[in-house]
Image (cartoon, rainbow, N blue to C red; front, side, top):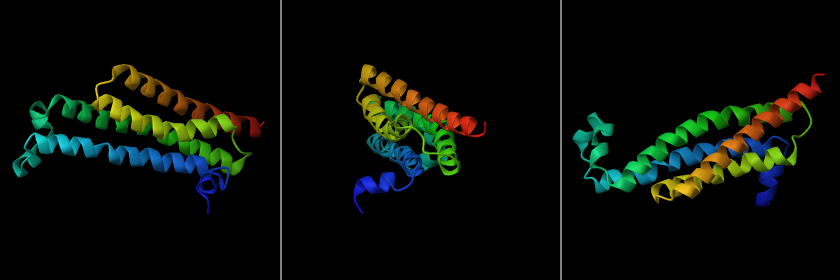
Length: 152
């Protein structure tokens, strides 16, 4: 099956993939944090209070920690939007292409956001954060619009 077919097999497929990819980004966000903890000489005794070692992290590691925390926040906003879109596309007509693009763009933007945060690139980080949030908003709006217009 071609890669494109995986994302377009059903009207709800792109939103399901968005949910899966967005959760993968959250999981991947721990990799640089783990590297920073290693550089800060993470020891077994640090397991008792892993956040207490924050001051020992290098500057990029502190940013990795913040990026990891922000990944959870972004996911907590995006996941319900993706679920709403899945439900709407299962019960009604397919959502507009704009919603599909926004849903699939969100995880990519979040991945770039993590790199920009760790790399200390504030303009790129801000762009990815704002655009990712906008993508989530588009998915919410289009999912809700589909459900509301179908019931009238």
